[in-house]
Image (cartoon, rainbow, N blue to C red; front, side):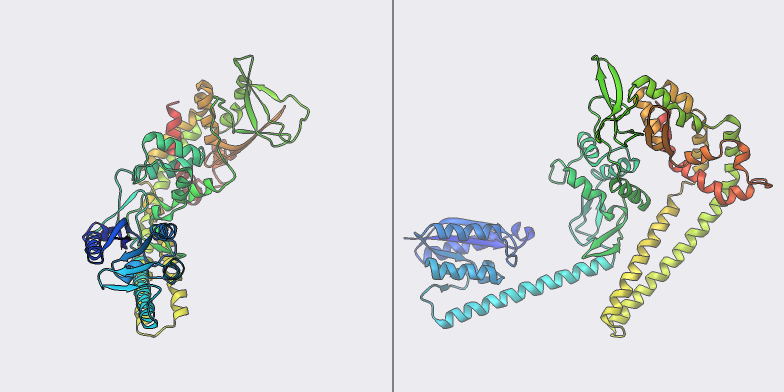
Length: 518
């Protein structure tokens, strides 16, 4: 009895779960019995036949080449074998160079080195038809996905944090993994964590992929770069406004992007040096790092990465912490300024609320107008009233505009209606920043310092730093008189400047609340 290989294939997981593979296998064994063939190896796979790199198909071809005693290969029909010219040539080589005989169990056809020109011609015709069918399916699938994208439907496998809904064909929020994605962006936006640190934190907290695997560092970076989480998505090089539920705001996405692609890269602090990665040397710009002396004393010094230089460059941790009191003390508000700002804030909120409502109405109206224009554009394209290049240009313009308006709407909606209460609490906390710093641990002092300023430098004499907002405003206007414009009651200032600055304070409220528990 002659030996044979049996290769059965379906093109998708859905078909694999059905009867197709079993039906092909059954027909293959029945065919082998009729032809007095013994099947010695079976390939039962789910893979597309139009791709050039087919792992299972390549394994079968290599196996057939290595075993000269196996002369027969059985397929169900020709399009189960291949739908591309590359694999058709592999089959031709098996026939011509290795003497294999190809069988098709369903059509009862055979082709081998003894086949005539007519049989080979029909084989080529059937292969060409199968290729065309595959191309048609691929083109229709691409058109369908593009249509879905234009309607705001994410056209592919849902990224982590979402799940594909087979009923609505939308992507739904994954209640198990979505909180990890939200926390991922929140951690990155603080500027206190690197991608590796975030990956380690979320892994410890239980983040796993849909297959139950630990997410890699590169995976976390990919997630933070994906606009799908704020409600948009990229498809074939274009940006679309999605109809799915966003997990984060565009503002938070932009902040995380700015931190991840910026120059600041926090380092893992395994040895407990609280002020590592906080300061740079004022003389050469190298990092200031901690070192343990006499097994128990911590000193900080320049790394001297650019060469040794003169000066007193070893600071005891206690002395360094005392020198770093200066930036905190200078932006701690006095009692009267904090109380006056709180009262002024109440007046500013009234104008802010009215402005927010009006802004949202205008944005919704503009969004509806752009959607209407986009709809008319599609009608004009289908009616042949507009050319392809003009259509593409206007389509991109309208879709980009929709994404921009949606982002502005999210920002307007994201303004906390209770920001007065939160900002007032921020002002209360700002009065206690310096006393809080003095009584905190070194690790807590470092958190406060990172919160209020950046770009710290130190040398023998001075401490350099750059205040973050809104603390830069506190430093610029240390007394109540400096907050008020000349010859004015303060109302104009509150209306056009103070409202914005206090809003920044409200946005930083959660970070300040953390410091209260130090």
